[in-house]
Image (cartoon, rainbow, N blue to C red; front, side, top):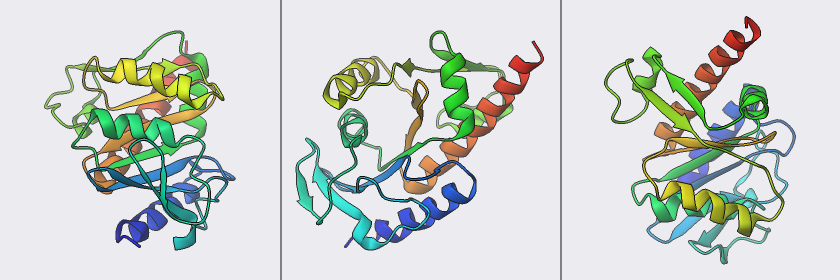
Length: 198
């Protein structure tokens, strides 16, 4: 099995300990070759992952290695890998902040004038903004992944939200994906606290 497994197991434990991956929610993946992706299997608890909890699929979702079923949301990871060749990891969490802010958002979420925006590649100043698309959640992953892909091809994004569900973000390494995730969580919490103040 690939070396990325150990890193994803560690990330899973860390994200669970922070309350961002409760129960069997969320999924973690890493590109291990140009056309092969390692992803957590369906129904696994991300705080207690073992090597047997991962499978390998191709960029169309066909199972290549592993004895378990790939995550139901594998297609959402794959649209990111297909559209951004530099992406090496996609992380999806069910955190309180990302779930709540996705329910409050009426349209794309705009994050602006935060110093921590510099955590995202290519941003050199706080005097800027990024948009985080918010999609309606659905059980039909083929249809949902096509909707997400239509948005991804329009330009660089750092992540997206599924309403009442959570955040997807990615990076050129597992570490960078984690840093982006941590930045998003901080920014979402700031926005939620501002909203509470009216």
